[in-house]
Length: 325
Image (tube, rainbow, N blue to C red; front, side, top):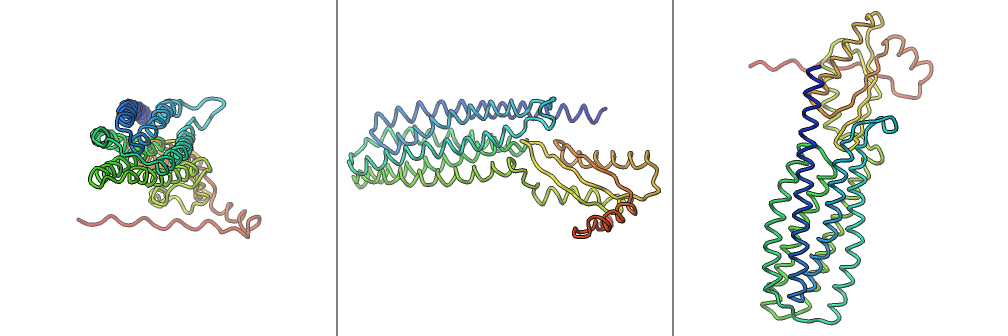
């Protein structure tokens, strides 16, 4: 009971931190839209205006992230027994598609200005983007920290997007400084075009990362290694197979078959399975693990008779002895 209560308290704390980070990102993006669009209009710089339009998309994406973090944290119900965690990769994929769509428009604006160059008033643009870079730096660090603590793919996507905006701001500032020094107006749309290419690259990366959980991609090797280490640390586990894992938002869903002695009493086997599950949860508090216990000799006969073309469950190697101090 105590373990369940502590896990519930941890989940509530992580949810609060996720919501706070999402609200911070949304507030920061609203501020940046007003700042960049105003500076872009006053300066006449297409690269600054492009940054402002990109931040407009960021506001929609941040609002989506805030909704997603709240929706994904809803507990499982009759229609969604595995919870609502896939809202998060769906939101990350939607964010990538929004970025791709806006990038096409930004390239069109940059091409138009390239054909009809005009020298912008760069002072407004440089000032606005320096402030924007500072805001992005603070917000992205906070969102990155919370994304690592909670394992939220939606917040991780938002943090990556904010870091991309920070680099874009730095690039546009450099372009405006060069326009000021050289007086070459085509440097402004050129920098805007280069910025969009970096944004497109980030959008493709976000889409690729989001598709993994949606397609039930296997857990990372380091996560599976931790689970194997727990299984191999119990001498009663003679072998195991069908170890599978996937993610649903910030949650890990894991199942595995463990092979125990045929003569092991059922209550003892049940207690052992509960002990293994609790040990895995201590490593991954957000895990939903299901262990199927099987009699070793009977299962090996079954495997030989019906699954000869499949690899047999191998014996669990002994756990490494504790190091002497």
